[in-house]
Length: 367
Image (cartoon, rainbow, N blue to C red; front, side, top):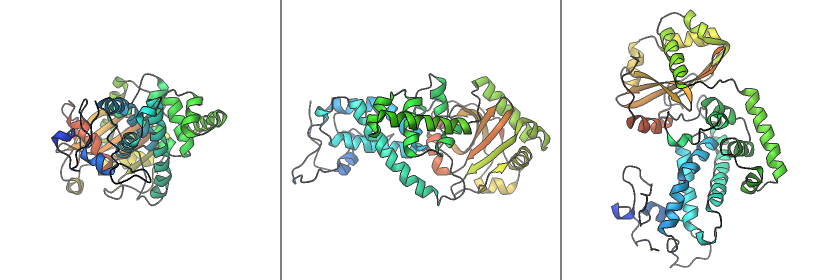
């Protein structure tokens, strides 16, 4: 079945847009969303009667939707931002919609190539923006069960989306990051990676070797199961709310670091705290109750234990809205890094995900 887009540019129920997730196609829907029609690229020389939707079939749309979870997981690992990953996948859909899909022999490979190159362009521009970013830049955390976390069958797959490794990936060149993600998380052979990035196979192997070395050199993290993650969080909370520094110091490695990302919208220290005593002192003060803190965020948030990007985490929730996610990097020697995301722009997806899950009563109310 083939169809032509309606002449109007507005989206309504007949356009096949899921009202709960604007811009998403309902599976099996027979129409194309109005926002996509309005943004379709027009090839050079196309006449006034050009209609790129004319050749699009329901099967073409469903084929893209079947690939969406994989594409989102790739984009998130490449960009460290769920919102930017969603944008990149939607732009990939526009390219798919405007292409002669009947001539594409391997749609999955074509989509991966388009998405990866869009992300590489985004990474290049993002580097310039982050030079003027207020304070430390940290990735957008994803809570347990978020489908954008992608495959988690192997240690390499789980590690590639851990918060600690996402931070390390920021040190890589765009091509190194792309090769690392495609190889480590999704098992692409170097032959296919080379085709995606327009490189030689030898160049892909060399980039992968360099990327793995950079990540290994900076990595300080041990994979823990859910029970161990909960135990770590419980011990940390007990120490942080004890009012004393010594219990926190005992949980930290000597070279522990604490860093926060407020994006200039929420107060966060511009530079990291380094060393067990400095980190412990900061955390003790952070969890000390105070009227000024409650006034700043509008109340006393409930604190829940969970995992974010596979790492032990604390989530602070106020009136159904996540106001902070604290991620812990753990080694056999103790907690080696505490990374706090409080930038509200980077907590929107986590809040949506939180609203749809059963999380029980908070462990405590902070501040």
